Every structure is written in structure tokens, then in C-alpha cells.
Amino acid sequence: MIETLKTYFEQHRDNHIEELMQFLRIPSISAVAEHKADMQRCADWTAQALKHAGLENIEIMATDGHPVVYADWLHAPGQPTVLIYGHYDVQPAEPLELWSTPPFEPVIHDGKLFGRGSTDDKGQLFLYVKAVEAFLRTHGSLPVNVKFCIEGEEEIASKNLPPFIDKQAGKLQADIITLSDTQMQGPGKPALMYGLRGLAGFEIIVEGANSDLHSGLFGGAVQNPIHALSKLLSSFHDDDGRVAVKGFYDRVIALSEKEREAFKQVEPDADKVRSDLEVDHLFGEKGFSFYEQTTSRPTLEITSVSGGFQGEGIKPIIPNRAIAKIACRLVAAQVPDEIMDAVEAHIYANTPQGVKIILDRQLRGNPFITPIDEPVMVAAAQAYEDTYGAWPVYTRSGGSIPIVEVLGRVLNAPVVLLGFGLPGENLHAPNEHFHLVNFDKGLETISRFWLKLASAKE
Image (cartoon, rainbow, N blue to C red; front, top):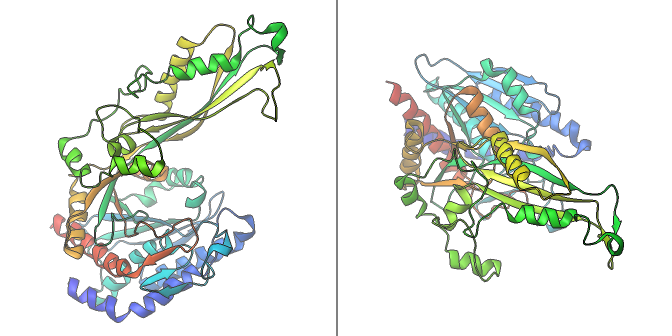
């Protein structure tokens, strides 16, 4: 069957690429209000592409922001249902002068398709649409049931998608969730990203006297909020880089030996990192490698400190308030509000006299993980190996994609991140592009993945 599919992809490649270029020509920039009509036009185009591929029950569903496009094909009794998530919105293209060609006039050069959205995420999303088309045109059916959930707000933090998922959980229910919005390790080197860190972000506001005070009249006799904040911030870590907040690590799931061995395949050279950053030493939690520290361990980072007069020169005052912004990156199975509860307890236990402290909780995102020995992950790895001739490396991201965790949690299904982008394809930057060799191999990998999921049920 796979050879028939590959022949179909080869015979229709030019048409598929031209259709993708039509997709890329729509400036679906979700962050800019003047592109609201383009967002609707892109949702309409996406719905028509799904219909052309042979999908059914296509809906353009309203949210409080840009619409979600839904479609399904549910005629494979006894087989798993795969929910495909993607997004049709793109980043703004500025600065335009740094593009070699206009961002919304896609071109092919040196085996690469240039245009905003080519790798993030229209190009990778489009692979699933064409995989559906190929199965239906060559065999009249799909090996698995499929549903599509394609949003228009990923580039603005998917703020309206979580309530949409909660409301439409029955419609979206699936056995497996998959998306392609990540990268491979390198050319010909597939990667399965199986973990993303979560996020807890908050401000610490330290208030002292009811106004700024003359430092000559009150200095040395009234608590300085900046002094108090500095002392408090210094209490958050011990000398070995470990977060000193009681309970901070209670829910952390330790890495298995298999994971630590897998990490060695992708571990960057710490000396090169240090050299590239032009710092004398790296600093982090002892007992863990650089990659482990930045992907599989939680952090508490002070991202901003402010207080007092910020203009030119010195204003000799005791400020009446000081503020610090904190971002905690969390790992499975930490819970953002539990972490902020622990930090708040630490703050109250260590607050110097003479000030009042307020914790303003602002950002929450749960971490995500799909174990690498999960059967769907094994099937994905085998599909990669059959296509690329190489078993994928296993990676975790130090960053966060909160919607991935929301999908997995609400629908109670494992999430597989099948990335086909490459490092250096300039997502979010000028001259974004997608290597077309991975357009071809992506189609084959997805097809093999679906066939393996179906055979596992037989």
C-alpha cells in the first residue's frame, strides 16, 4: 500500500506544491487587526482544501476570536481515531526589508519553499490534508478515523482555544492527538519531541511607606523595599543552583536511565554553549547536564527587577515599592498554582519586617509529556525509521506550548509531535522556508504512521 501512496504523491507533487503556495499567499496574521478579513479568507480556504481532500462534516466554528476549522472522516470501524491539530495563522512578516522575496509571494529556490508560514505551520499542516487525499483517491478509505482541529490563534497564544476545546470535547474526542509544529534534529535526522515544560509567571510587589522618602531624613530607619526584595530574591536558590522553595520539586518525575541515555544523543557541547554566550562559566542545578537542566528540570528565573527612580542621574530616595517578575518553567507533573502556592508560602516565611508583599499571579501553563515507550510513540518512531532510515532521537523542549497539554488533558489522549521542520528555517523570522525533501518524506511518514496505528488494532 505504501508504494501506491508514494506513487500518488510523486504524480501529484506539482499540484500539491501549487496548492500549498495558494495557502501561503493569504496573509493570515492573527496579531494584526487589519488582517481580520484575511483570517476569515484563510479559514474558508482551509475548509475548501479539507473538502477537496475528501473530508466530511466540515465546519468553520466561531470563537471569541478567529474561527476554528473542523472536519472529519469516521468510516474505519474498530480503528483508532486520530485528532490532527494545526494552525492557519502566521506571524507578522516585519521587518520586510530583510526578506529576499516578498513574504506572501512564495517561491521555490534550491529545494526550499520560501514564504511566511511555510514551516510554521501551513506547510506541515498541509501534509495531513494531502495524506488524507492520497488514501481516499488510491484506496477509497483511510486506515484510521481522523478529525481535524485547525485554529487561527496559535501565534497569539491560543487564548480562545482552551474554552473551545472544553465546550467541544465530545466532537473532538479521539484516541490519539498528533501535530506537526516542531523540528527534526537535522537533515535526515528525525526527532520525537515528547515533553514540553509548563509555565508559572507572577509578579512580586513589595510595598513600604506610603510614599517615596528622602534618604537623608529616613535612610537607615525605615525599611527599603528594594533591600527587602533583594534579600527575598536571594533566598530562592541555594549555592548549587537548586530552588530553595519548600515543596518545589515534590511532583517532579525523575528521568529514567533510558531517557538520560537518549539525551546524550542530542546533548549540546557545554563548552561551546559557554563560548557562544561569551560567559566564563555556566551555572545550573548540580548533578544534571546542560540539556537536562534546560528541558527536564524545573526552574525559577527572576526576569525583571524594578523600583525607585529610573531616569538619568541619582535621586536619593527610599522608594515606596519594588517589583520583581518571575517565570517558573515546570516539568511533569508539576501544577502551576501549586508552585505559586509554595512560592507564596516561602515569601511570607522570609518577608523582612517593615514591608507588605503582594503576589500577582499572571501566567499558567501545565507541562506535557508522552512517555517514549507509549505504543503510539513507538509507532511514530517506526514510521520515521521506515521513511528516513534512522530511528528518531527523543527530545524535550525547554519552552512551553500550553495548548498541547490542554488537548491531551481534556481529551485524555496521548499527544504525538511529528515534526518535519529543520533548524534554521527561520520560523518567526525573515526568509522563512521549508525544505521540500521533508514535504515528500513527511507525507510518507504520516501515511506509514497511520498504517501502523491500524495494524496495531488488527
